[in-house]
Amino acid sequence: MSVVLDPAVEAAIEAGQIRRLDLVRFDLPGKSVGYHRGGRPYTYNGLQYRPNRFLQMGTMNSALGIAVTTRTIVFSKIPVSDPEDAIARIEEFDYPNSPVIIAHLCGDPVTDQVLGILTSTIYEIDKVTYNKGAIDGSGERSLTLSIDLQPPGRSARGSTLVKRSQTEQQFDNLATDTCLEFASVVSSQPMEWGQKSS
Image (cartoon, rainbow, N blue to C red; front, side, top):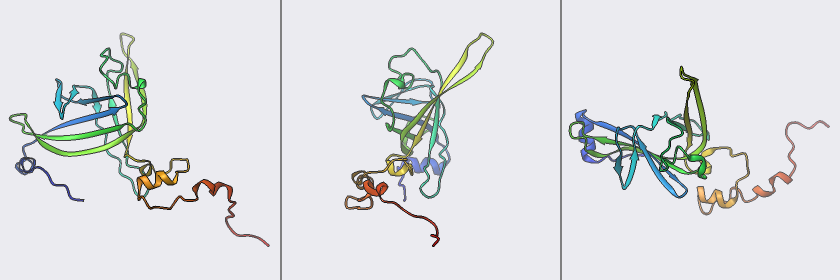
């Protein structure tokens, strides 16, 4: 797979003078919300990204075979009083499998103008966990939110611990795929493994 960069981005990379802006966009049911690490709100592609909310962008864990490439991102300041902050009240949404786009923009370090996209990756929310910090001197503790992401599509998840339907298999792969044609009856057919003694 080859990726063609915008000529302005390619020139900036070749010159060795870039500023990277990391964006995280969540498309939750009924609401899209974005976050970045800057100090003020930033608007990109019609969505306003909120500043200073996520602590860790997470690294992409690579995998072989049917294993899943996952990523975990961590947010601070949970909860907050801002009613527009969807991540602080994520439990109000039906968030499993909601799309998440992590984009890295290339900017000019002198003018702070965005030149183009370095890379962009689409994920789905797998699970959300809350992590409590230690109690400080004033008796308070911090609370962070970790969001585990996986590539989109059930076929990317490897074993889902449930049988897939023929329709789902065809949607993820090929419309004429008949691989799971008899998946619904497999459990009723006995299988014998190993050697038989006579």
